[in-house]
Length: 241
Image 1 (tube, helix red, strand yellow):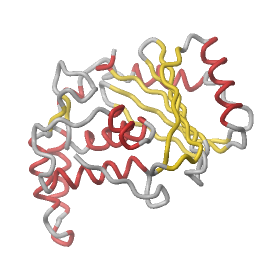
Image 2 (tube, rainbow, N blue to C red):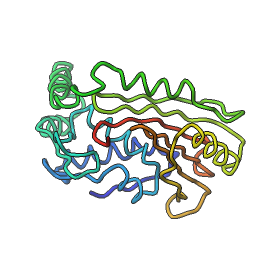
Image 3 (cartoon, rainbow, N blue to C red):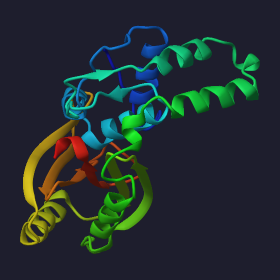
């Protein structure tokens, strides 16, 4: 599976990844039962934040185009395309003008029923979503950070709440603050790496923490993004426990 990203001003990274995988499913470049790379592996290959890939996979799963097998982890050891993909792929090949409201309703209903495993799990009652929200409610925001937007994705087996911020603070200031503050709160630093943009070093950086089954990631955009400076995500994944 090949993914070619365009400049971030074209569209968000997660949207580009989602659209390209969706297209490859439609033209059968990605076939039913074919394994997809894990979010971490694909993020490293593309030099982007793992949260972008996670969000793309979330969106594809919500459409019923990809699904994980029970008993397999989230690291891409076995990701397969559901039967829904064939139905939706056929639908995608029909001209836009002929896609009736009835067909749209049929596709939506069919895809919603494709992955019963995603509707059963520890977060079926929303408890894990509330725990992620609780982490955010006590999250120590660096002084002067202004929230730009928020994204939420949740199923019975995983939750991701991410936010983007504007800030004039340097990477060193923010990084030192969060390493100390989060470490004091029991979070363990598990990843710390530079991020490139099309092979160019624009100052981007990514670091992540884990605690009691939750992951907290922070991305510094550097000069690569005009809309936000820092992206912070808190996630929980049943299959990574």
